[in-house]
Length: 375
Image (tube, rainbow, N blue to C red; front, side, top):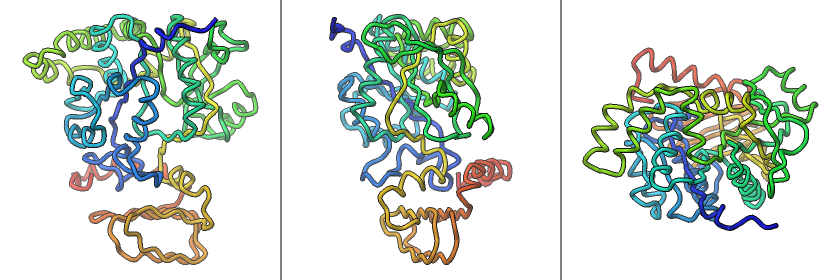
C-alpha cells in the first residue's frame, strides 16, 4: 500500500539559523555566522545549500527560517523565495528548544496537524537522494505518532558528536522499514567509548534533525518544561498580528529558558518510548571546527593542504592542513603538518587540527577581556 501523498503535503521544513559557530572563529562572527559562508567551495553559502536541499521536500512556500534579527537582511538576500510570513526573528539566542518550539507553535496554530522537520542551516549533505529517502521515512514515522530523528551511520569513533542508541528490530511503521525505536541519547563520549559504540553497530551519530507532528512536539515540551511551553504559546498567539508581535517578543522571549531540544524533548521522549530514529546512510558533516573543514575540503585534492579564499595567495612546501584567508596577504608554509591558519583583516588564528576544538576557549577569553570588537 502506498502512503497517501497528503501525508507529505502536510510537511513543513524549518531551518534554525542561529549560533555563532565559535569553533570557527575568526571566520565565523556574530554578524556573519558560519551558515552565511561558503565553506565547501560550492559557490554558495551553507544556508543556501540547506534551502536547495529542502525545497524538493516541502516547496519554497513551506520553508520557515528562524534566525536573529541582525541576520534578517542577509538571510533574505540568500533566500529570495522565502516568504515574509515564514521569517521568524529572535531578539536574542535562546537555544534550540525555544527556536524550534516557536516554529512548531506558529505552524500548529496556522495549520493544525502539520508535520514539521527541523534541519540546521550549517550542515553539509551532498547525497540528496538518500537524504530525501530518510526524511520521507521520518515523515511517515512522525505521522504514526513518533517524534523522529535522523541518525547518521558512524564512519569513525568520533568524540565530537552525541550518539543515539536504538533498539533491535524495526518500529513496525508502514512505509518506514528503516525506523527504529530509540533507547537513549548519549553525550559526547571519550575515544574508548566511541570505539565501543562503533564496534557495537547499534549507535548512530546525533545530527540534530527532528521530524514530528508540531502538536506532539509541543506536548513533549509541555511535559518537561511547562513554563517554556506557556511562553511559546503566548508568542504564537500574537505572532501573525504585527501590532502585537514585537511587544510580545520583547516581553516574553528574553525570559524563555535556554535549553537544547535534546534535553527537553529527545531524552524524555526516548525514555517514554515515543522517539524513533531513521538511519541516514548519506555523507554528513556539521562543520564543527577547522579540522572537519579541512577534511571536507581535502577530498579529490592532490595537495594535503586545503585552501579557502577568493584571493588566496598561499605558498606551501611539505605542509598539510588548511588555510582560510580573507586578506590577499601572502601566506607561506614550510614543513608544517596539520596546521590551521585563518587570516582575516582584524584577527589571525594559528593552531593545529588536533587542537581545533579548543578555538572556542579563545572566543571565551576574548569575551572575558572585553575584546568584543573581533567577535
